[in-house]
Amino acid sequence: MSNIVDTSDRVRSHTSRAINRHIDREIEARVRRYAARSREDITHRIWELDHEWDIERVLETNASVLAFTGLFLGRKYDRRWFWLPTIVLPFLFQHAIQGWCPPVPILRRLGVRTRKEIDREKYALKILRGDFEKSHVGDRAEAALAAVKM
Image (tube, rainbow, N blue to C red; front, side, top):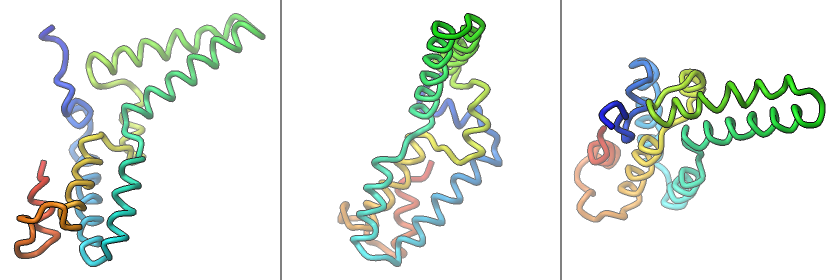
């Protein structure tokens, strides 16, 4: 089992530093913007984050849709459509084992985040909202970002 990549940050480890930095800067900028907003605005943003799809969910959904589409079209119209699940499913398996597959760089460039990145923003916003009393020291945005630093 030593060939299996640690799942906690495997997508980030297979993403270019520039894209990771861009995603991190966007998180930090949003948290700083929300530091000046109302508690209700912060609560709404946390709700949005709870419903944001992470990269794992996007990959699994897309692979399933493509595989089922290929199976349906192959069964109903032309057997040559069976090539679609034959290509897609090994990519999904590769992602499960290594944390990378061909769609990952594209999805990351499009801004699809990992669950850990989404949670980082969410917990910083919870600190801003006052969910953790001891975090109200100094600059609220900086304290929130420091608390969830990657």
